[in-house]
Amino acid sequence: MERAFRPIDMPQVTAILTSIAGQLNFRAVIRAASNEIAGLLPHDHVDIALMSPDGQAVTAWETGLHTEWDAETTATKAVDVSPIRDLFRGRVDHIITNDAQSDPRFHFEGAFSTPIFAVGLHSRLHVPLKVEGRVFGALSFSTQEIGSYLAEDIGNARIVADILSGYIYALRQGELARKIAVQQAETEARAEGLRLGARQLAEAMEEARRTIGMDLHDQTVADLSRISRNIRRLAERGGAVGGELEALEDDVSHCLRELRVIVDDARPSVLELFGFVEAVEALMSRSASQTAGPVNWQMTDDSGGMINRMPARVQVALYRIVQEALNNAFRHSGAERIAVRISAVGPRVTIRVQDDGTGLAPESRRPSSGIANMRTRAALIDVGFKLKSGPQGTEIRLEIDNAAALQTAESEKT
Image (cartoon, rainbow, N blue to C red; front, side, top):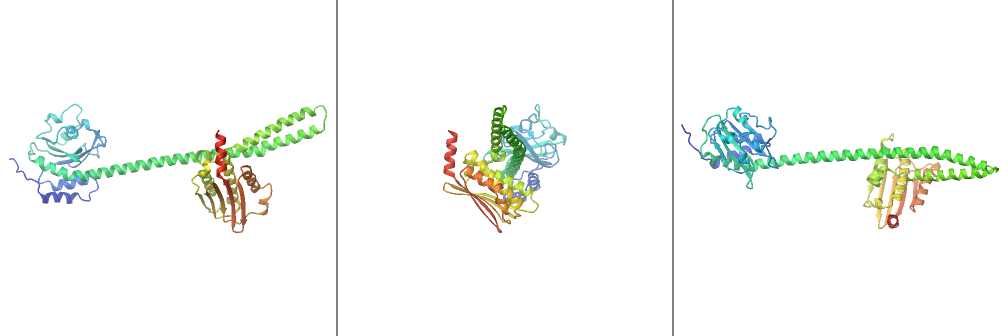
């Protein structure tokens, strides 16, 4: 006997809305709605199928009888193999069948209809899920009986679909946003990993270059200097070989000059790849990790990266001066706080290296000391060098005329 049709009224609409409110996933939404409409639209199985943003794939969530269409079993399938592909493509505005198992619309080459037939579903009713007039999914009802749905049921199904569409679409957009956020976080993590990896590689390269420079300076340059002195002593004795020895001394002296240029020009890789601030930060981080006690360090640049716009040789010299100052601070001062601050007033840039350590020992001020080397480097690039040290700590201040430096950089380009 044909069942009586009951149209959905406002209390039932309210009941459906109340049931889905607060549900946080698609399966919970369809399950809650299924319970409210059981007396209006008979069903053994209800599902919502959502298209991917590009409209090429579909994923389903179901309640009632379990089929292979469900997302737990089949993550996605192409829209073109769906038995209701015409609905997804907007070619029809509903599909109703008394028996899908014999309906030719559910049988075509490549159709993924097996899940329907495997659980004995016959009667089917499908309506689209729409937002702003655009189809983004489908709501489907099915029973194991033949001829369960009336033509009038299409209207009820559409009302239910309209109730669910906005909520489901919002859930879907939230899910997509979360996936995008995760992907972005993963991308940023990979980029950060690459950056850190490149930075560590650059630091290792710089350390290797520095070691080579030190070895060249301490061994090769020293050996050549000793040979040069011995040759000069022999040449001073005169004789037939004196002229030959003088020529040989000139050759050795030339090699010494060239070798010193190579040692002095060895440029820090971190500085080349990332800039002055990154290079100093890398140095401070490494130095802090090699210090016995805890040291709080800070690198601040209030100049807008002005040092990176200076000539390469100026950047290298400034880095070497700061490097020497930081080596002293981390290794010998016993400081708990070490800071490097870069500031600018007009064309003048100031670099301050400050610590709260015990101050410099008298021997640190000798001509052969690191302080003297810093003064020499500063003088070679026309940078002001000021030192203040006492029981409360040490400050080394470099004052650079940036206008002159930039002018030099432009002249070097031309």
